[in-house]
Image (tube, rainbow, N blue to C red):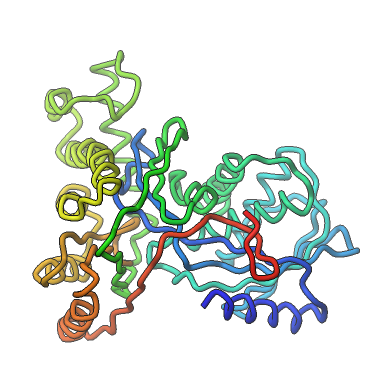
Length: 395
């Protein structure tokens, strides 16, 4: 699949720009094993890059003043002048790229002309962070081509800033960090407060991670996401007013939360209650993974889904159905909604010998219940953004 993506993207470049691309880059999507919605609340997350990518075919140009993109999957082009101040436009995919350029421009660094064609095997709108791959892939390319001397951490932060300023989604840092820092066969336990991180072996022997794409994305994703942040921020404000000595949100105890319950209101209480429990689950999941304890990891995934559905309220009927029915199947220790919510994918931990049977059963049940053909993504944990060259990856 990767070779096909590279060939297709290179061919698109030749067709549009009438020349050969000079370099090829791959930026992966990501899964998050556990730790949902805690990345903007001083929490830990446990993501990993996956073997689905955006491929960029790239060439520097003699016209040093223009950047031109061709989005193969949309069959759309866009150009801008590098010496001009950029503002958001009506096309969302363009804003991810313009936001990255704007962040680099504001830092005082200069880039020249460039032509890029890109295409993706990361399904959009499925919670696999195609946006972070696009942002960070572009930032990585500019860093490589124009010797900007940006660190990996700075590249991730540039991607996040692009989403905040040009797209209007107040995302945390997890998606961008995963795309940049991913390592094959390893998950990242990331402290979203300090950006300190450590790797744990993804010891899933005998089990596979399979994503079930509900193929729905309810329209309140952005508004719902930002509303949840407001609920959490309100709860945090009350907590810190009552307990000013506590430095990080994750250090509040459940007793403190109970004490602030009436003042913050039931909605903010539920949101914060879920987050504090989820932060603790991440540490337990990292340990379970490294020890190969699939049953306990599955139990934690199930608890996360229950919290996302009932306490954080970001699930939907389709995802609740998928998770509930999948957990009734043989060989499924755990399942949960993954991503921002309101649609997208469930992530399922399934014993290898039962994978095909579970997929067949759930596909049929979902079609019968909702009239929708579920999509299935079998994923493997892979490296972060890298350059592809002569059948080998340059990390």
